[in-house]
Amino acid sequence: MFDDFLIRAVLAGLGVVLAAGPLGCFVVWRRMAYFGDATAHAAILGVALSIAIGGPVYIGTLLVALAMGWLVAHLAGRGEAIDTALGVLAHGALAFGLIAASFVPGLRTDLNSWLFGDILMVQPVDLLWVWGGAGLVVGLLYLRWNRMITATVNEELAMASGVSPDRERLILTLAMAVTVAVSIRVVGALLVSALLVIPAASARGFARGPEQMAILSTVIGAGAVVLGLATSLYADTPAGPSIIGAATVVFLVGLVFRRGSA
Image 1 (cartoon, rainbow, N blue to C red):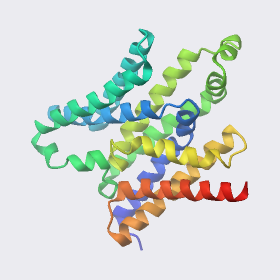
Image 2: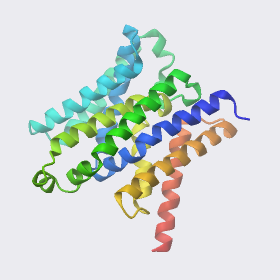
Image 3: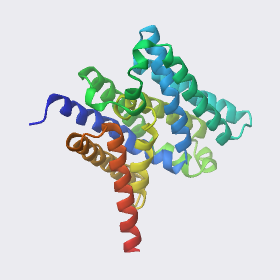
Image 4: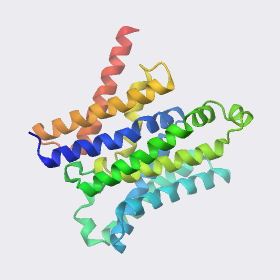
C-alpha cells in the first residue's frame, strides 16, 4: 500500500492541476506564459517575507503575487512595453526574493524546496490550502467562463456584449495569483508556470472546443502528477521536476502523434 506521505503528495498534485488545467488554457490563449513566470518568481519574495515575520507562507505568497499582477498592469497602462516590463519584474522579483532569503536562516537551508517544490513533504494543512485555493479558482472560472472566453476571443465584441475585458483580466490575474500561491509547495516557484502551460499546450492539439481543452488539460496534468511521482519513487529523482518532465514527455509524444496522423 502507499505510504501516507505519497497519498498526500498525490492529493496535493491533483488539487493543483484541478486549478492549473483550465487556468492554463487562458494562459495559452492569451499568450501569458511570461506573466506566469513573473508572478511565480515573485513568490519567492513572498515566502522569504512570510518566514521572516512568522506569517502564513501561502498568504504572503498570494499578496506578493497579486502585487506583481497589479504592477504589471500599471506599467502596461503607462505605455511600457509589456514584454520589457515582465522581463524586468520577473528577474528583479526573483533576485530580491533570493536576497531576502539569504537573510532568513531557516530559509537558506531549505531554499531548493521552495524553488523546485517538495511535494513529498506536503502536510495535511498544506492539503487544506491547496484544495481550498483550487476550489476558489475553479469556482471563479466556472462562474465567469463565458465572459472570460468572450473577452479572450475579442475584446471589442466583449465590450459590445456588456463584458468588461479589464474586469475579466483582473479576475484572471487573481486566479493566477491564487494558483501560484498554492502550487509553490508542490512544484516550486521556478516550475509553476510550466504546470500551467505544458498540459494546456498538449491539450490544444486534440481538443475541439474550449471546454474540451480545459478538461483534457486537467486530465493530462493529473497524468503527469501520477507519472512524475512514480518516476520519483522508483528512480529516486526530484518529485517536482519529475512531474514537469512527465508533462513535457506527454507534450512531445502528442506532437509526434499529431504530425504522424496529419
